[in-house]
Length: 155
Length: 124
Image (cartoon, rainbow over all chains, first blue to last red; front, side, top):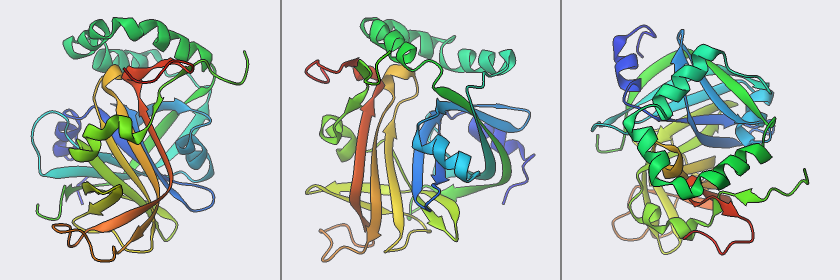
């Protein structure tokens, strides 16, 4: 296990864009959801629909596992963080958290380029989120343990 | 607004066939003693069947959620979710010794870059 203050955690996460969130439903079934995320003050923040399986699971059982793999750069390891999650329906992130999301996913060459390359889908995207306005909420995960694990049986 | 949404991001797993053949990322969630577990996996798609192998942490018989996903930015985000249980395959296909099969009960797939009206033909 890594110490939660281990700088390797931040270095690893800085190369990650999507976290895979494993949850358990009220009836004991597993689920996994890929989400955008940011980290602030040691906790992780994500956004999802209130009706999503992940949100329902967290509302029933806050035990989660976060799985990170580097999308940028090669690695033979994944970072696995176990933590306690809360889901707050309708909650808006603080301006600081929103700014982190904007910088990470839109206000950079990769994010802006993605929007420009897909301008034709912007009207559909705007309508998609307008249709679902008020249906989202905030996930906050407080880490409990962290470890680097092999990506495959051969690693 | 009516309950039925006009815009969808849903696709079929077959629409994302390239991900089945060359999965960018794959992981499996299970439950152990009531707690969530998750491991990255090697994934193989063979004759319509889903096979996974991990360094550790997977057991035949366990309920499982397989996630194959791709992308960093919005329009790139796509994925396939297969929920079911793990099984030791009868006579695994050649080259898949040591793999478990994810026997599907529920499946879904999505592609944010393929958002469209529900009455459109589907991903372009």
